Amino acid sequence: MRIHKEGTGSISLSVCIFIAVNSLLFLCLPSSWWILQYAILLMTLVAMSLVVYFFRIPSRVLAEDDNLILAPCDGKVVVIEEVEPDEYFTEKRLQISVFMSVLNVHVNRNPITGEVVYSQYHPGKHLVAWHPKSSLLNERHTVVLKHKNGQEVLAKQIAGALAKRIVNYLHVGGVATQSEELGFIKFGSRVDLLLPIDTIVNVKLGDCVQSGITPLAKWK
Image (cartoon, rainbow, N blue to C red; front, side, top):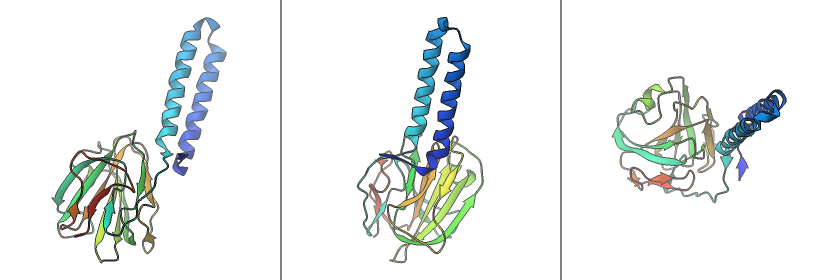
């Protein structure tokens, strides 16, 4: 396991807070208050550890299969339905959405290999990520990948109530490789995929999936 580069600032800040808070406590409080000192030491140590844990990248054997559309993130499948797209596409698409809790690995990965034909950031609200309007109203970043078979997949990173920063590494004109990093969302969120309507779905609602490993669907 290693730590993601996006965690550098947050982890450094949490370490500084941990050192500052506990240094002040042990310097300013009398020794007779040692129970309080050690209780706060334990709580701040747990909080700092959780921040480090959030930015983990576990060791995995990632999949690569041109016939499959892989999960873009770790989490639980919360939506599988036909929708009228609000962006890029004009015809109905099949939406599969994966919700990430703060305990999930938050690295986002490319679901397919393809040319990046669209990339757009949208500022917005921070509704809870499972809210039905979060796909339309929340802060989000949308990219569209064009597979070599001519089909296109839209991936939308959506911020949640706690998520305050979306990072996307793709650029229009570039080539995204399946299972390589698409981006990162800090502290809880979700990713929507919009697929061709005739795509064959391999998961069901409530399934837990892993980015770059679990096949959400396959081409017809």
